[in-house]
Amino acid sequence: MGKGRYLIKRLIYIVFVFFIISILMFFIYKATPGDPVRMMIGDTGNIEPERYQTMYDQYAELLGVNKPLPVQYIRWITNMLTGDFGYSTQYKRQVSQIIGVPMRNSIILNLFSMVVVFMISVPLGIATAVKKNSIFDKAVQVITIVGYSIPGFVIALLAIFVFAIKLKWFPISGMRTAGLEVSGMQEVADIAKHMVLPVLVMSVGGLGSITRYVRASMIDALRMDYIKTARAKGLKEKVVIYVHAFRNALIPVVTVTTWWIIGLFGGSVVIESIFGWKGLGLMLLNGLMQRDFSVVLTMQMFYVVLSLTGNVLMDIAYTLVDPRVRLDN
Image (cartoon, rainbow, N blue to C red; front, side, top):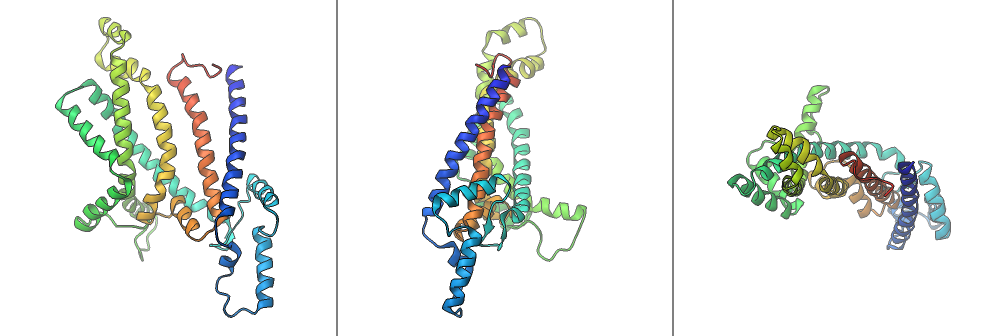
């Protein structure tokens, strides 16, 4: 009963925050300079004034900008909640028709980055905690500090210079080799080759931060009395570390991991732009440059929903890693 009541409260909270942020985002973008209708029409040099006015009125009606702002907002949010994200002035199509492929590309890129980060950072964090103050631990600490201190775009430029220009192991940008007509596993291999550098760059910051959090949490857990008791009972060291200590060290790790995953989608905007990866980040950047407000607002609200959902999932994850945590409290 407690969990159900908690989830209902959180759902109400998500809905409330969603609408507040949607109002702020809508009116902020509407206040920015530029006329989306004029940008959609394009060059007007050879258009007669009467024809231009007719076109302007038609596109204004299509974009819904010929009504007062409160009416525009109500129309926009109502359509968005029913799956109609508006009309893209840049692509001359409905946003719902163009968002699917970029979203899939971004999700694939981010999922691979998450897998790489967790496969390396969790075992590495545990190993450095167990071997605290050893040469191995100190070396890892230096590398992780450097890793998450350097901005992502700098790491991207270094990766391009080393692996694409000097060693020529991987392509500089894009998702597929230009002019290459392949299918099946050859196509998958070509996409994977183009994915290596973006995944590498996106993983560096996460490796540094999550490794350090896992290490700090494990060090605190290994100091607890129940660990001494488990060792006194003659349990194997692997059981003590991976069963008793690691589970109790997961709560702070869950917190930072959730926020890192949420930030990963937002941070991929820069990486996707540098590597020409046709995902949500590149689409958002192009939308901002072209003042394509329907695309931009859709992307922004996607990140809002992702963030709000992440908070709820983080609370639920607490109860999974530590039964002492109760959602209703």
